[in-house]
Length: 269
Image (tube, rainbow, N blue to C red; front, side, top):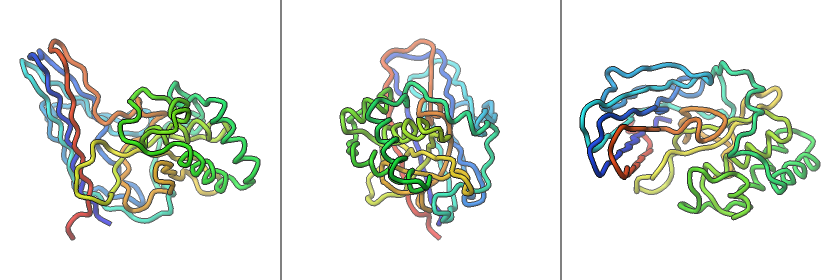
């Protein structure tokens, strides 16, 4: 399946900024079941950007905008071809040791109820893959998908306690429960083809867990499914804060306002 993605992020400032810097996790990788056919990033300073691979193998761009300006726009756009792999990630190299993904963060630290979900699934399903599917089902059942119900700093424990959240919260809750059981699990950002013509307000997020004999397997608790060819994988880390698609800072300026528009749809053949 060929998927066209356009991801636009715009920062507007009430007063002029002397300089600004953005760190971009916006480039999808090519691996066995995903091929980047075309991909560009448009942004001030992109021609002089520092590009590097981080400790998880993500391609990162660091761009700077010098001189007085009152806005910055970053546009990532391209076409990616995907194949069905039943959620199994094949041929993608990550330099970080698997055990790194056992580490809980502030966002994924498991509360009592999250530990109970994990323990109940482990007790009921001796096969690890079945257990992971049960954890995914329980998290989706207990965290209703509601846009705007949480914010970027909401933790997995808070989302579960409130019973509502978005894909970031579902992924964090899954990571919390799975890591509690001693299974390496990582946070993933990317894009998802969905029904409807209205632009999305953000990219998508899900989780991956390490399964014996299979390797890394994706689990999208927000949609209670393993990733299909409708998914484009971009970056991975320990939690959402580690792989924010566009993260900026500035010198000068007041009252920053960020807007995001994402369109993901099948590409014309």
